[in-house]
Amino acid sequence: MSDLFNLEKQLAFYRSYHYNNINVLLHSIFIPTILFTATGILANIKLIPFEKLPLTLRPYHDYFNLGVLLFSIGYSTFYILLDQIAGLIALPILILFGYINTIALNTVENYNSYIVTLFLIGWVVQFIGHGVFERRAPALLDNLVQALVLAPYFVIFEALFLFGYRIDLHHKVDAIAVKKIEEFKANKISEVDFKVK
Image (cartoon, rainbow, N blue to C red; front, top):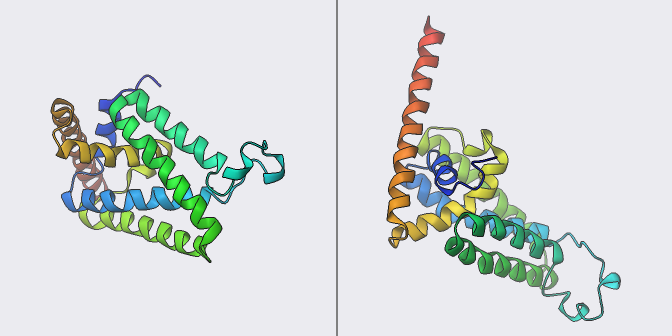
């Protein structure tokens, strides 16, 4: 629990599973795709039926979904607690994803088919990236919640790092990740040695 709000450790955990440049590129494209489509899937769930919405909110029913809004605020709150700037960048992105999906759900025929297909493609690409380029199982197999919550934040930080944001943190995260990768490889070698004997 003490590491939950330790940004350096959180990013290093995730980075140790995403060190290959091609895999990072795939994640930079398909994590936002997965997040966008997951938001679209969530937009199907109406926490409060239209009839029970306060009269002042009814005109906005087709433009926002309370569940998606709470999801966006929840994710962003955690992100803001880790790093205010990155978290404040995430908040409008998440709200925009919810807004677009809620409108599309009400206006685009067969929208769910499109988002579910994209969602599945995004996940397949993630597993290919890990299997082919990283040669390692995805982080979600070791820590599902941490991986699912941290993945979008990692992508935001990768973009921020490209622009020189918190260079010291970037170097520390990479150094810790390299050590974790070396430990993983050493454990794999010892597992092979054990199986051979």
